Image 1: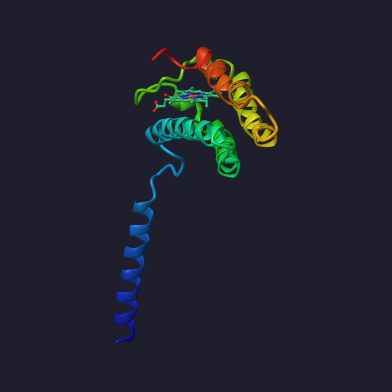
Image 2 (image 1 turned 45 degrees about the vertical axis):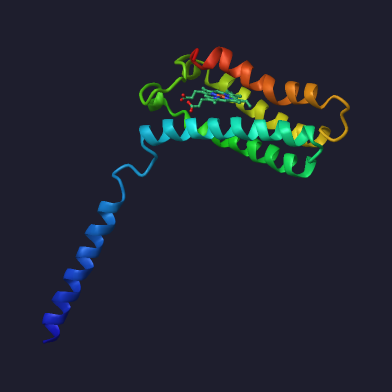
Length: 153
Ligand code: HEC
């Protein structure tokens, strides 16, 4: 009787273990598809956030604008992890191969863009030229990177 129960329990345990091992992909890192689509989604989100920051700052809603600036700053930092070697092509990526030939330069631009968003939270309320400040600390970073590292689109 006890033996029979033990066997049933063991069967359940092995079923559960099989289920657990199947539900994890062999490689627990993000797949190439998830990585490329993931970074595109973050860039698109940053674009939307930048436009909101522009509108909020122009209207003098600095608290909300500043929290979005910090969010964008964090997003830039996380983007650095989204360019592993195996994601140079596929899934309509607009990333250029030169990124992987100049990884340090690329990462440094990302860090600069991130740091500039923090700087922006410190100066946006003081400046009497909001539009110019947003241009130099936010929008110019997009162009600086895209002109070298992103395909024409
Ligand atoms: C340090 C480099 C860098 C900076 C800074 C940067 N980008 Fe990009 N961006 C890229 C790269 C590389 C891609 C292409 C990603 C891909 O297709 O895999 C991209 C793609 C995009 C896309 C297309 C996303 C999609 O769905 O395909 C948008 C929109 C975008 N960036 C907006 C911006 C805006 C707005 C800024 C500034 C506020 C900015 N980016 C700053 C490098 C950068």
